[in-house]
Amino acid sequence: MEPVLLVRYAEIHLKGLNRPYFERSLMKRISLALRPMPVKVVREQGRVFVFGVPAESMNEAADKLTRVFGIHSVSPALAVEKEWDEMVAGAKELVARRIEGLASASFKVIARRADKRFSMRSQDICRVMGGVLLEAFPQLRVDVHTPDFYVGVEVRQEQAFLFAEEKLGAGGMPVGTNGHAMLLISGGIDSPVAGHMIAKRGVQISAVHFYSYPYTSERAREKVIDLTRILASYAGNVSLYLVPFTDIQLTIYEKCPKSETTVLMRRLMMQIAERIAVSCGAQALVTGESIGQVASQTIESLTVTNDAVNLPVFRPLIGFDKEEIVDRAKAMGSYETSILPFEDCCTVFVPQHPVTRPKLDDIRRSEALVDFSEMIEQAIRDTERIDLE
Ligand code: ATP
Ligand code: MG
Image 1 (cartoon, rainbow, N blue to C red):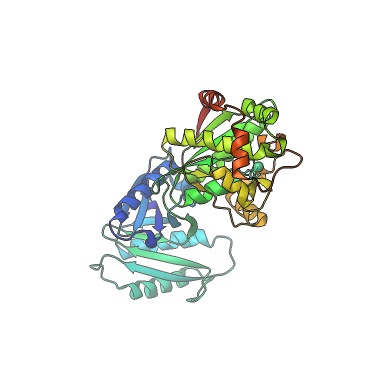
Image 2 (tube, rainbow, N blue to C red):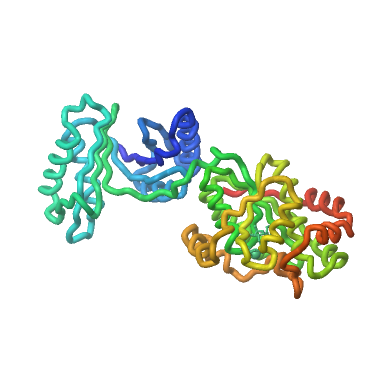
């Protein structure tokens, strides 16, 4: 009898020739998520099995896998010989653990017989196993419609697998199967959520953050690193690029019309983000903007920001209310960090009367008042990279 994690993935992504590619990517992501555990990940007929997790770490490992995109659900399971007595012993062990401390519970046995040579048919397995468990655990009763838990019996080619618990996974597609994007991450609530949503679609994420030391503090920078680490717990490795932005911001503030500083700053951020994206192979930019949330997120402002770059800009939160974004931030575990009170460079230099409907020609003209090219080069040269996982 050997502990194993049984991983189910969403069939919908598995059509045709992409299936082996998808499965291999998922297996790689699983190994990475469980490092440094010496696991062996194998696939068999629509399932992935993870062997080698120490028995005492099964729950922790299963929880880690619920964050890996591409997984529908995970069950801590037992792999046993295809001998009926072994299977019964395994099921009893799992059920005992599952109902520990409960006065009563309802269950249902579900069986899959992938190995058609196995002598019992699925419905017989359900019936006989159900009877054995009822006899062994007086507090159990059968409920075929809405049981408290399922006891699973899967008879496969080499072994049989048993489980009595199923943890829901994050869904989506394995990171790395859908390209690479550069997230503009601030210390706020929105951008980590935006990064999470794009990563969930299988996109590898890198991140870029602009800071304006000494107007923004060391603590603000640490906060962004912490947020990126939370994002990386879902997205796998994330490289974070930290760009010193003080000179550019001060120059905008001194040389350009005050009401346009926010829009200009955003254009310069986008240009630098695009340069870094191209140099590391990212194919799109991602921001946490949502339409109308603040002055710089009107349609006109977004148009002017888009104009600064050639790469596509993804804004997954565009149609969300703040409340919906907050719910997602809480669910992904970034909210508590995001609301720590450290300033962002966007908020340090906010003009009193920002333009809400900037005109592209006006903004281009204002930007042309200064030659930013050397400042951009310098900022890129001084950019620091931190790899988070
Ligand atoms: P967030 O909650 O993500 O900070 P926000 O609602 O505060 O968003 P803004 O401050 O206008 O909105 O920023 C809009 C988007 O611009 C952010 O979601 C983020 O993608 C990007 N951004 C803002 N500030 C920075 C920064 N200092 N470094 C990198 N990107 C930033
Ligand atoms: Mg912000």
